[in-house]
Image (cartoon, rainbow, N blue to C red):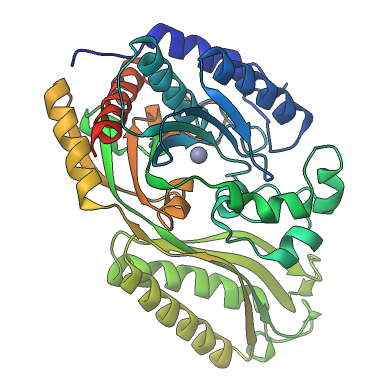
Length: 410
Ligand SMILES: [Zn+2]
């Protein structure tokens, strides 16, 4: 079939949505449930309805556009929320490519045996209470305590943020009850890394999505006078952290190639130029596409932290903040996407996703696959985020063809 998406229309949609929540520093700030996000939601609703799809929204604010027929559903989507001061393609490209694909199916009256549903999941970026609020709600995987009593990353109680919306903790926790009978979920997304651009390939077919382990940690020593405490008598918490950060990175680089580890945030206490740090608080996260590597890193890295603590007279403490398991994409979906790429004449390569996506949550309910399009210069989560329009059009055509094929099979 020669059906294609309308690349100009997709571009217009992305540019229009990209104007909602414009940040004066550049880029887009549209965290879920912010005034900008509420405006974007209303915009998306009108687009979904304008496409001739049946609009619905669940109790977690996930938005859907359904091309109705039978209960069995093939879903495609992503998210339209952004990190503060983010870009206009992370998430939005996937929702609007799915919308464009569904619109073409409606326009061409393509006969299908299954329902096609476009999805936009709430708060993928985790600005509210942990990553993937919407898709976790959709699967019934939320921690009730967090939803009822959690604080957002902006410091406000989540309950207070909800007051500006039509949603409550109860509707969020009940959202999964309206989930349709899902057969598969497809998500187009910008790569958020440099590989496709470097390789000169327009399409990445994701075969694995990395899992993540995120902890809040601290080395605890003893504060002391920076002038009078001899070096050999110090229990300097910062030196513990510095030693740990370097050696943990070396360890992951040498023993677990392809996995990554990051100390993203650190604070020294009491935090004065003349006082030896008595405590170093820091975040630690590591990611891997292999469950075995993730477990091995956990063991190796926390063993190292304990070793460093004991040789430096410190104490090491840590608390798990979040963990997600790596996901392998169903071989059937990888094969189907590759076949469609060949028939469209598009180059593609298999790759792993280092970033987390709603698709990895959806993989708990159905087969879930991902299509990556290049991120010029690997930039994402930044006002400088761009897209290669030609590659995006190819990715959207691939999504369209995959939806038609999956929607046609019995
Ligand atoms: Zn995203």
